[in-house]
Image 1 (spheres, rainbow, N blue to C red):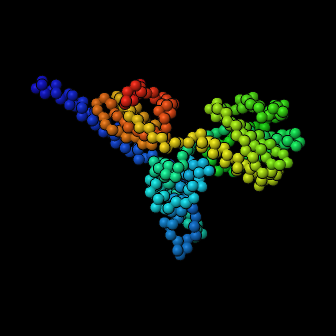
Image 2: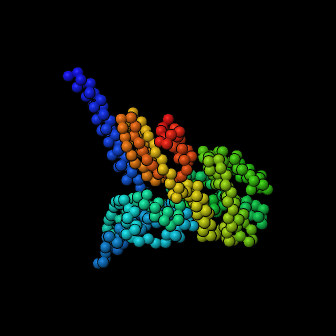
Image 3: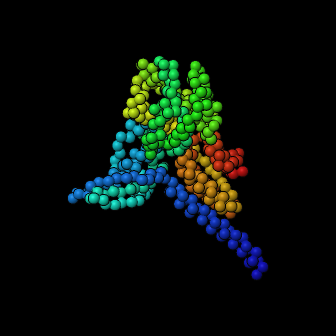
Length: 359
């Protein structure tokens, strides 16, 4: 009897750890396939006529959702490579869709769709076309546009500046950057005017420091008889990038021309932001990692974080025992980038062995 009792304890513990690991495994598998791009609020309307076909409306919604996603993750220069897509190919990248609302009003059919696209399939589709996508990170920047009339040796800011007044009127759904405009402050205006002669070298720190934002875009719009030159000073994560763009002459008192310039400048900033967040899907780093089984909640949180990282191509459990769960993952980047990315989430790894482990 004593002999049997001694043998049953490790057996019970073994069964416990196997069940625990199985639970973790199934949790992981579920999360792997849940990784998707979700596009919401695709609104379509169509007259309810004799030849009305609801499937055609839904298919149109799929196409709109796809191109909205492309606008979010692909730069403007690469979007021309995806002028059209076959419906069957598009549907093959959809994980699920939902009809969030549908109604008939005066013989018009209205529908609101939500569509989820498989990230891995989207990335593969883009990679086949030599397009590197970007992580669709939304970001807020302090934005200060200043018109400099070189003919009159004068500058315009705040309510005297039509670009300032109209910048945030038309917000696009597919734009990732949110712009915070400064309040009208006479002290700021005086400070800028004092630095007119060195405006291109002026750092604007005295003004920027008043706002609770570390990132900013200072747009200097030089106007002369020939055209417009725009020098943008973009500050992000303490890095400064200077971009110079030229535009044909525009009447900056004409609302249509002002809106056109705003649209063009926003495209420049969106493309730059996409470049900062670009994913090199051609880099596929294979990593093997082991995590202690002591804390199942910690394991679940780790998997959730992996699942939410766009640079993780995929991950799965290769094996488990009573002490560790072993993961294999593909990361779109270098080992140092992976370690930096995970360190931001408070994960530090021992990389001395072939299989990395959390410290």
